[in-house]
Each structure stands twice: as C-alpha cells, then as structure tokens.
Amino acid sequence: MPVYPLLATGDLATADLLTSMIYDYTLKTTNQSIISSTTYQTDTELVTPTLAAGTWEIWLDLLTASQTAVKVRWATTGTMSGNRRCLGPGSTETTAEDVSSSRWNASGFSTDVVYGFRTAGSQYWLAEHAVLTVTSAGTVTAEWGQNVSNANNTTVAAGSFFRTKRLA
Image (cartoon, rainbow, N blue to C red; front, side, top):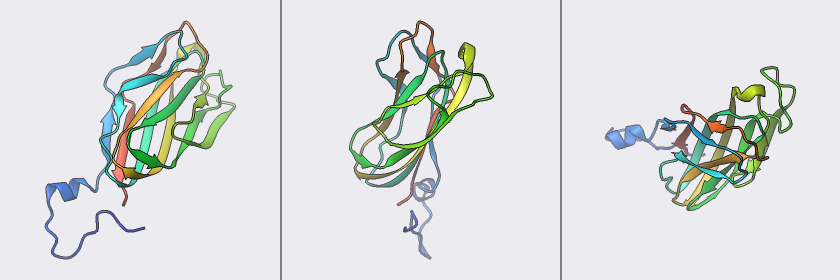
C-alpha cells in the first residue's frame, strides 16, 4: 500500500501536509442517555469529519453505562466499504469487572452489534475499529441504543471519541 502522504525530496512542508499525517479526534464532551427505548439514538457528537475518497482508519472508543445490553452500529453518508472489528463484553454478559464472555468479531458498519453490560449500570468500555475504502466523500456517525427496552438510563459518556486517519 502506498504511504500517505507521499513525500519527495524538496517538497514544501505546509500545515495541511503535516496535519494530514496525524490522527483527527472527534471528542464527545457531554453524556447522552436514553430510557425505555430500543430505537437507535444518533449520537449528537460522535460524527467523523468528512472523509474524502481514499483509504481511512477509524477507531470508535465508547464509554458506556447501562443495565441492559447495548447495540451499536455506524451510519454513513457517501459511499464506503469495509468491516468493523468489535471488542467488548459478550451480548449475554451481566457481571462486573471479571467478564466471563467477550465479543471479538468483525461486522459490516451498518450491522447491529450487541454488547453485554456491567451490574448496577457501572461504566464500561467498547471499542470498534475499521479500515474503510471511501469512494464518495462522506461521514461516519455512531448510533446506539438499548437492545431490550429498560427503564434505567443507557448512557454514552463524555470522553468517548472517534479517531480518524487517512492511510492512502
């Protein structure tokens, strides 16, 4: 795979060129919660910058708290292809820190991925990663919800983020 950006001797080091080589972070600054709903919540802050045509690495890091299983998917604009790699508590997990089942899988970005939860609504971590081929510019947005309706809050917390970097 070619290196992005391709630098040659004598190239002018501009701000745009230098910033194209580092990760871009989209940080969630406020908590967002839903109650008693299995309808997907489009996250108000976890939206990537517009991704131009090319190959992109994307990492979604979610801090969540729930007393029911949480489902996550990615919504996209533009035209993109690739698979998410998903890591978190297994969909039937309901215990504290000593997780007995884990989720380690690959899924399409609009596929529902269901994660378990910790007892008493304690905060826990989910991670999803993808290398996407973008053929028509667009954005990626995190969508999440309760897998089974529950009268307690399901929260995606401040400090969650998208990390993006163009690879080619």
